[in-house]
Amino acid sequence: MGSISLPELFERSADETVAKMKVLAVLESLPGLGKVKARRMMVDVGIAESRRVQGLGSNQRRALLERCERSSP
Image 1 (cartoon, one colour):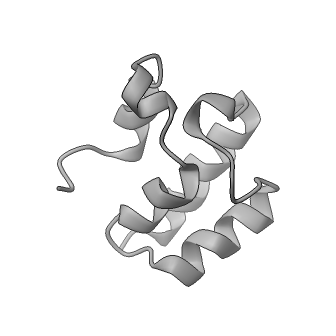
Image 2 (cartoon, one colour; image 1 turned 180 degrees about the vertical axis):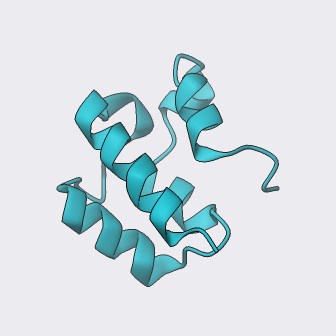
Image 3 (cartoon, helix red, strand yellow; image 1 turned 60 degrees about the vertical axis):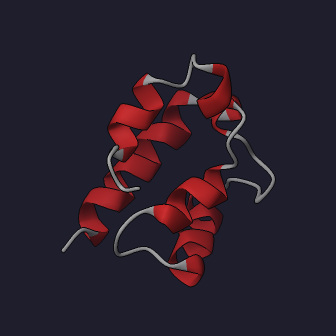
């Protein structure tokens, strides 16, 4: 629904529902990021398409947040 930002989602990653979400699906759902940009971002950061939110390391989270800030309108 677009009612939560990526930083807020990462803060809620202890929630089982959030933890099991695929990172690619999360990125694709963000405003301004489509399927192509989301996949490119994951490749640039070095995250597998099958990775779930709970499996992200702190460096990967930080890199995604930085890239999302840069791609925001």
